Amino acid sequence: MEPVVLESDELKGKRVLVIHGDADKHVSLKSVEKGIEALRRAGADVTVHRDPAGTHFLLFARTEEVFEQLGEWMKG
Image (tube, rainbow, N blue to C red; front, side):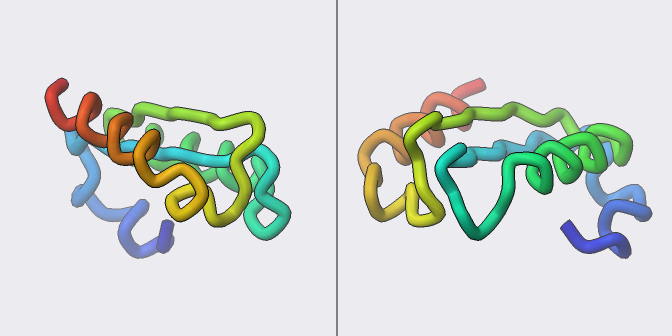
């Protein structure tokens, strides 16, 4: 979530999916929440999915679930 992107009009009206594992020890939930707020301020339509037990490697640990969530989001 680079400031140069967030400060431009590039995200206005764009759909963004954020999937975060709350057990991630590398990227804090607080950091992700700040990023989500910034995306929304930039005009993005943000959908958030949080996995309470998900770790930093959520995509690899739960590949099928993540792709299912992505597929459902893409239909919307």
